[in-house]
Image 1 (tube, rainbow, N blue to C red):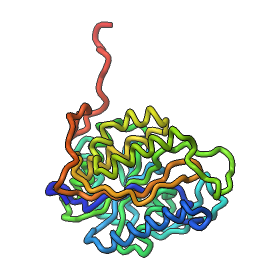
Image 2: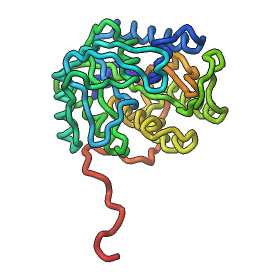
Image 3: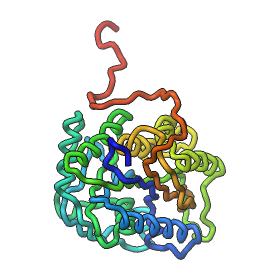
Image 4: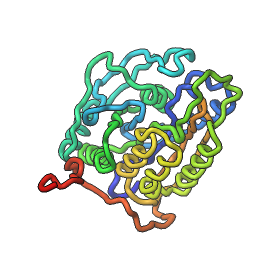
Length: 308
């Protein structure tokens, strides 16, 4: 763990329910399930005080939402894969931390609010991640939304606010980003045995992304994510925001030990389980083109509102 971060390690996991609900339907699903199990054990063996989940399948429109209901109980059914069955859950949320995170975000200029009422629907990605990584509620969790319209600056500030809250409360965390790599999925039902990455181009770019992760080059990924998005045409809420948030929360550098535990197809999309652990070594920094930001002050004015 770096000196300026309270985060022990970060995980990147897929949002789709197959590893939870039908791991035996495909060897790839079973491989992802086994990778989740490995990460579960590592969390249990760590001294983390909580798990922070940034989920791309919880989109928000106005500002950033943070789950704060101490005990969240419901039954979820995925919109796309409802035929796989229901996902009952009972999650223990660190309500105190969630409120602190909200306050830290507001101090950095963001519009944020907590969600704290029974029956609020927790998204598929968060349900899958917490069910597999923390099945016995050994430690509490915090779930934060991914704003559909947030730009790079806003997302980076949101990531930094997470670490602010950890420092304020003296807590250590494991952070979990729930996101696909490529996200082109088949539009018709397929036999699970025939699942594959939707296109060779998607697979090629997924492999490039995984090389960066394996080398621990998190900030390089953050910097290059716009280019990656342009190539594989995934939704922006999935493509580059997870890299921005993860780098901002853990530390904007390339000093990580990266491990790709699994990479498989999930109904055509690219699903990977990856771990990044802060280290003292570095792959080597480059001169970054994207700027850094500490406080969010709104979108930039690109037009002169005076004389036209």
